[in-house]
Length: 172
Image 1 (spheres, one colour):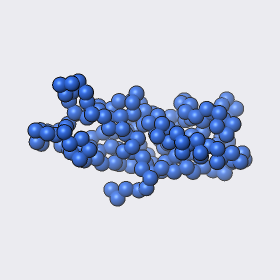
Image 2 (cartoon, rainbow, N blue to C red; image 1 turned 30 degrees about the horizontal axis):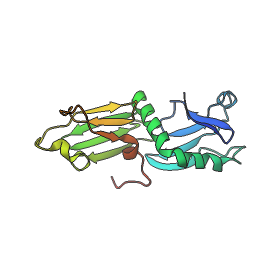
Image 3 (cartoon, rainbow, N blue to C red; image 1 turned 90 degrees about the horizontal axis):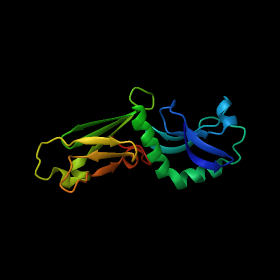
C-alpha cells in the first residue's frame, strides 16, 4: 500500500500493487474496506489520462482531485515507476544504443517505449563503437542508470517517468 496524496477531496489517495496500471484510490480505512471504493486511472498504456473507473456516488469533489493530480503529476509518476520496478512490471532490454522498456508485460495494459541512447546520452558512446551500454534500474529514484562508472564516479540517469508516460500515443 502506498499513499501519495493526503487530504484531497476528503481522502488520502494512493494504490495497492494489485492493478498493473497507474491509478489512485482512497486509502482511508473506511474506503479500503468498502468494495465500492472510487478509483481513478492516471494512464492508459502509458498515455496520461484522468478517468474515473466507474461512476461514483460522491464525485462532487472530483475536480479537487484532478487539480491535485495535475499539480503533482510528475511526482506521482516517479512514485509509480518505483512501484513498477519493485513489482517486476518494468523490463529493460538494451542492444547497442537502443533501449527498450516493456511495461506491464502479459497484461491487457502492456506497452513498450524505445529510446535511442546515442541521441539521449551521446557522450556515453563516444569512442565505443558497437558496444552495449550497461543499465541499472534504480527504484529509489525511479530512474535508469546508463553506462559504466566514469572516472568521476557518476553514471548518467534517465528519468523513467518522463520516458514511460506521454501526453498522446506515440507512433511506435
